[in-house]
Length: 166
Image (cartoon, rainbow, N blue to C red; front, side, top):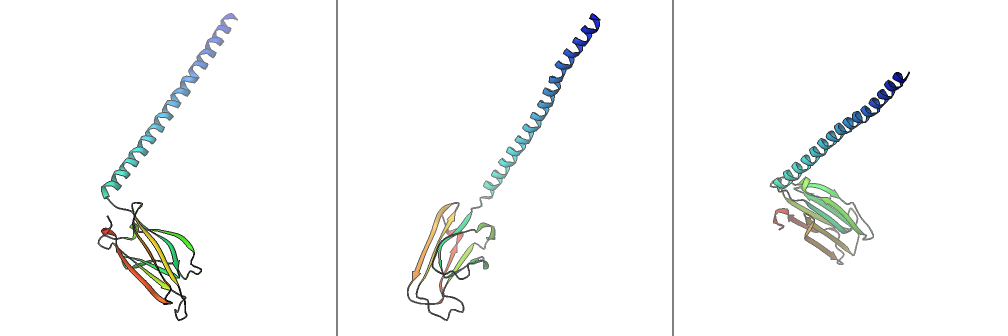
């Protein structure tokens, strides 16, 4: 009987001592797998950052602050935004990232502004336009134009060449 109790005690000790080792081994394997995933993510992030740096591609955006009454934004002769008619001369913050639209050699943007409401045959005494252009989050151009002459239809056109911004 004593022998049986000794064997049972030894078995329990071996079982209880062996179990944590198994869990520790499993935890070590999980930790190694997590470390490998972390290293892969860090490597991918560094590669992506290096790739972006090697491209040397600048990020351009335009932010419209005021539109009265309508604006059209063209990039490389393609219309990418039409505000439609906006009334009451509101304060705005309409932001467009331009880089995705710029093709090599086609780095110009054109802004057309209209006063009044289509078909632009009725009087509208005031128009106003305000926008900023950013290169890599640094302001490189700001435009503020307004008039009270009562002109309607196309009242403003400006072309900007992105590669000229330093």
